[in-house]
Amino acid sequence: MFMRIDKLQAALPEPKAPNPNEAAALQELLGGKYGEMSTLGNYMFQSFNFRNKTKLRPFYSLVSAIFMEELGHVELVSNGVSMLNNGPGDDTEEVDVSGAPFSKMKDIRLAGGFLAHGGGAMPINSNAMSWNADMVTTTGNLIIDLLHNFHLECGARIHKLRVYETLKDPTGREVCGYLLVRGSVHAHAYALALKKITGVAIEQMLPTPNIELGNIPECQKYLDEGSHRRLYRFNSPDYAEAAGVWSNDEVALPGDPPGNLEVVEGPPEGGKMAELLGNYGAFAPDYAPEEMFEVAKKLYKKSR
Ligand code: MN3
View: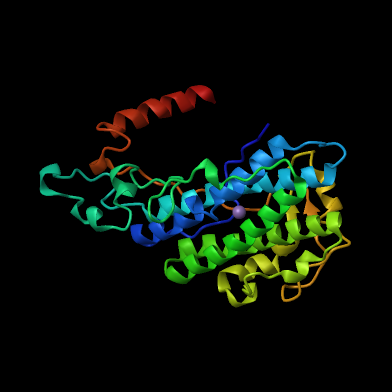
């Protein structure tokens, strides 16, 4: 089962202006080959399909805890996309529909982001190709699955860096900075899991690619707080056995701030979700928003 927390895993600064082309670039980190839909899909089904859950508890717990975090990464990137797409047009503005009020939107990188999804995120990449189940590897062989996950996290690092290098708006850059730190944790965790099983010190290959997180300003505060050493359990009483892999016996990667690795009982501090308003000119939430707001207000009062 899952529990939901009405927060994001990281606080995102609000964009000063809509920037749908940056939102399109960020889509790569959602529905791209190495995007958050892929990490989520892989670890989710590997966790569901896991055999010998009791006998292999530390590995099952590790995959399960990381899967939970990936669901929040999908949420974080989706919010980043929606925030960057927020607009065009005033929140309450009556528009002249006959005057092509949104003519600029046909020229953006992902026109469908506005035309079909009203500025919302979708499980597609930066070229609008659908994410699909072919991105999921779940073989029933723990070592092969862990090797795939290690590759996936290393690939995700290079994608995050490239997307970061294209962005100027602080919203998308923050998403990349946070996810680079967390992706580094997950690559490290799968390397350690493989080492515990095979005896091969795969973590010595890291960081692959050779990105120093300390050179990225948006990573700095997460490194300062020790996020690169933490694995979260999101207040679940379960999955503590992940500490068998991600434990005090193991330390941060060389190049990152030093310290022991730890499993944290609880979620990251995170941040509020942005309050994005409807774009009435594009018929959201609908033609009579004030009436809908009034209905919602009455229902809210009744529920108190
Ligand atoms: Mn992730």
